[in-house]
Amino acid sequence: MTLGELAVRVGGRCVGDPGRPIRGLCVPDGPIPGHVLVLRGRKVLPDLDPEVGVVAQEDRFPLEAWGVAVGDVEEAWPRVLGAFVPSRPYEGVHPSAVVHPNSRVAPGVHLGPGCVVGEGCCVGEGSWLQGQVYLGRNVRVGKNCVLEAGVVLQDGTVLGDRVLIHSNAVLGADGFGFRRDAAGRQVKIPQVGTVVVEDDAEIGACSTVDRATVGETRIGRRAKLDDHVHVAHNCVVGEDCILVAFAGLAGSVTLENGVILAAQSGATDHVRIGAGAVVGGRGGVLKDVPPGAFVSGFPARDHREEMRSQGWLRRLPDLADRLKELERRLKALEEASS
Picture 1 (spheres, helix red, strand yellow):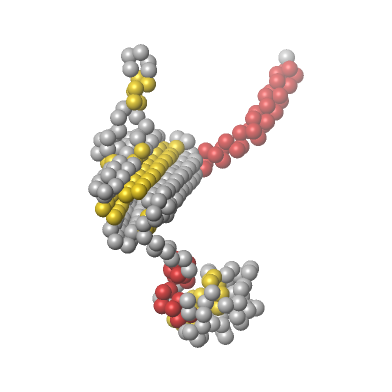
Picture 2: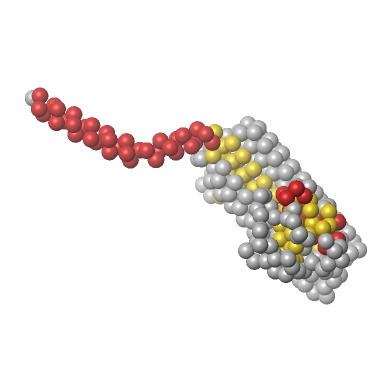
């Protein structure tokens, strides 16, 4: 990549020779000649190596430096990183891949070693299945999706376009449904629904999204699930939601658009979390949360209330000591007056 090409991809102004080759990115603590570093915030490097380029905000671009000047360095940051993401090689269908004759694999689809495409599947143009990916019966994969190694899409799972699923995620497995019979034995409730993942969603490694008992479990557009996230049967995860690592949803939970669940947080079944709400780390939601709220703790409640409560809890040992001292003095006064 040349400096001029980087400027075009980032949407900035080329400063210096547009034909200068760029070998990659580097960090301020480890400058590498021929690479560029991104000056984020108000960071200034007075001793910048002249062989290292910069991507910096237009009004703070270092004098005598070369690189790319941008209007907003934070807004340009994802595009800079994206320019250096290695392209995935198209190698067609590997000889060890198994494709059912009743399935349709569009032109330009990559099927890596050991992939299995079951009966009635449809894989959209430009999608890339890394290796050991399993598609059950009647699975639909949209255009330009990426399924990394070990991904499993069980029967009837539907992916929109440009969906990214990281290694060893499982979508469409049985929902966790049981009931006790008259003898107290656990009886499995069959799960006959599906999972639908909308365009541009991303699902992290080792995450699981269970199929609905009846109907759909749905992951909305641009929703992002981190690694080790669990979404149970019949949940609805709205557009632009973020579920951080080890977050979990019990059955039939609804997340409206833009909800954030921090790490290790969760929600019990059949609750609704309103648009734009945030659940703090390790928060446990046991009832509906209004739009825009910030809740934390277990059971989850208004974050400010939870912080006040935690403050009082931290003071309890001191208060207990003071109470014991008051009791000692009171006892001494009673003994002196008797």
